[in-house]
Image 1 (spheres, rainbow, N blue to C red):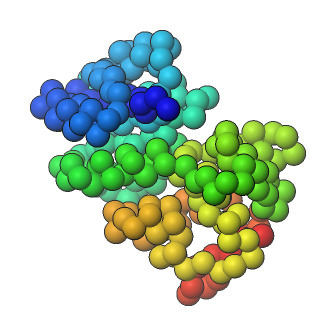
Image 2 (cartoon, rainbow, N blue to C red; image 1 turned 30 degrees about the vertical axis):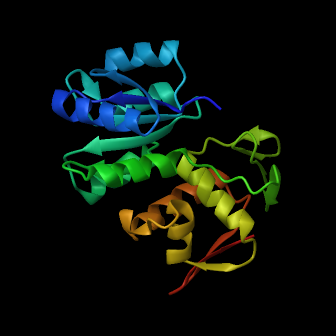
Length: 219
């Protein structure tokens, strides 16, 4: 299996050089660009497993780069200096799989990268939940043959519900399933945003029920 290919869009030379070095030390192939235009050209010529996007760029924003990646299976992590709940929600609604504020701990970012790239594979390539069919080999989900536009994190969340069909899962169990043992890397209230987005995209094909004071159940 070849190396995972990561697109890094960051205009701060010091941050970029440190990230490129650290990611390459972890065994990833990294393409670094500094602007929206450079990133657009890179996405036209190459395919990426993950994109790490600075939100504030000299010629635009990370949201613009995310638009170039919407038709691909590229996971997205946004980097920003703005630690604001409204901004975080906008990032998720804009297609982010994760969001991290500067300054950040390198080990934390590397853990998030690893988990964003990770997909579930329990040896059963196709599973179903409600009206949704999940192809684990391809990492895609369908409703009646129509491909769902899910981020990597939304896909893993859906797969977690499918693996625990009809069972009530606590918020902690869901977060631990999404982030392995690193659930402390994500705010608990962020899960509400993930669930809301997933429900909207499923359009009622899966019943995700809120179990008040406990968590969620899906069937």
